[in-house]
Image (tube, rainbow over all chains, first blue to last red; front, side, top):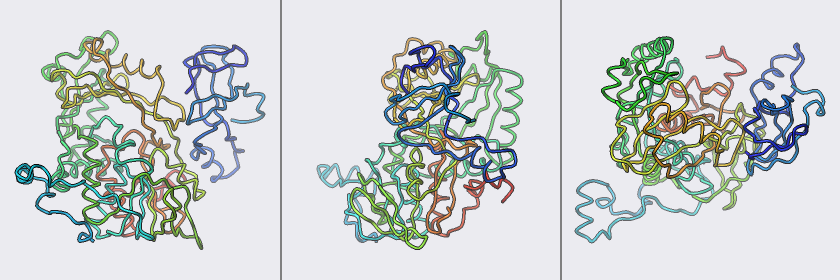
Length: 90
Length: 415
């Protein structure tokens, strides 16, 4: 993991200020979506080796949820955006 | 198949006698512990992943189940992955029904392993102590110890004075986490991890298994819904059955057959200090944070802590976690504050969604999966190999590994 995350609100900050939540690519199913959809949402992961989008919370900063796109092999961070700009995910 | 391996049987059966005999011959009789064969066109079983589990699987397939036309494909060299990156601890101090008998099977196999595969793996049953720091934690450990005993596993609950006699240098009166006692498994301990890989590799090879290093699998070829072979950096190799044992990179391999797994890959770091005089006789774990330590025979303290916490396939971690581990260590053993760390490294873990592994069939008839070992794979190596070999040979799960189904998240009630 890179040492710095460039928060769109606070600028480059040490990654220790942030808390990782996990995969930003999965969307919460409707309550009645059925067991298969809920199983996939709760348990299955793309787990890519390479580019990966994740939710990170700027816990010790602006307390905004961010979407960080980074490389799980090289630790390079490509983009950091506010989660609200990504549309509806959860 | 054993006849295909040309060796001097007296010289290559390791023993005090063979050491003596080879010494008389000027030590010219030693040969490599395993061959470096050119891959055949087709194998009965191909195992992807030449780590501890893959090699143990091949060994037990050949030795216990008579399946010798086997290849183990390793993308790098034997010992380069997690089998050489762990903190070498073995134990079977598990609470839950599905786990306990499995890890106890592993412990029993560890206890006879060196005689079984004729290799000195330095199995050292020096005892594993889990410290407790509160009444609630003591009760939880009592429960776990009782569960272990009900399964026929040894467990001893030690009070503060008993621990103090064994490990006087612990910070018993730590202001936040005073040590009240420990749950001890005397049969737990450490094993020299490289020797486990080498011993299994040698034992499998001598029974006819081809261990093919520097052979990365790049694709899995299917025809009519069945696997027919693998594309590799050394060309296509056909197989009747394909077994995945690539923990850390399970997703990467499963992607080749469009199988999505309940797994994330995370990095776990481990550390070794400069060599010290004998200091810590057992394996000790901190109960108020994630920290575990033992002392190797060379004198280095071998220790580790938490995973870094984010998805990673890089075999290196973050300094923040290094600091966290060091803090936990010093909280438990203040004398560590003046010890210098010699090396640190990272290994990539298959983190499953419930902390337990997967040994199962898949949606493809002749494809088997061994994955999801989290940070507990090393101690499981013998039982994992044994149960997986049983599954591959008989197409039926071994009694002891039956709980580790792939579909348990979707259908938890099935048995």
